Image 1 (spheres, rainbow, N blue to C red):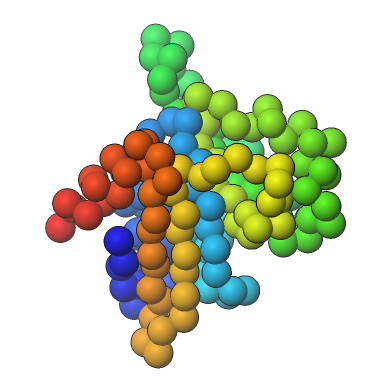
Image 2 (cartoon, rainbow, N blue to C red):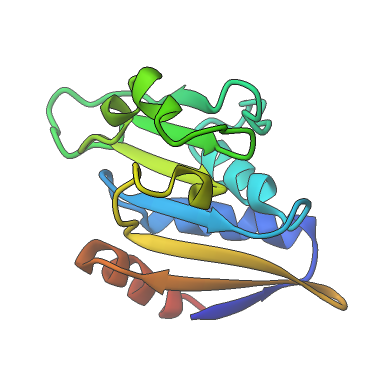
Length: 160
């Protein structure tokens, strides 16, 4: 699935749309050159749940935790969004030392920028999202790798 995003606002709006249909337990890998809009898309995703959240790339901390209002009555509720930026990751093993496996849980969504830097440590994504420059905006391409990912892409493709 491919979608054209004409500007920053369209990228934020797509992140919000993605959040609307994204189930808990999903892992999304974000690919694209520096400045392609990965963090902008993540900002839209997170601000759909936390409108006043200051979302910046966790380039030096590697991961930022956004805790959402939890629902004790619904074990399938989305309680956390983890935003990873692995651009400065020296070795995939560093993720192990950070307790990285603890972030991938049934009540969380993990949005991972520069996942290729964690190759060999990260598991298969549910959805790969690639942003690329176009003369008058950005193109976002989504590729699903799991049933959950396919369900998400199907919902997005049926949205007007």
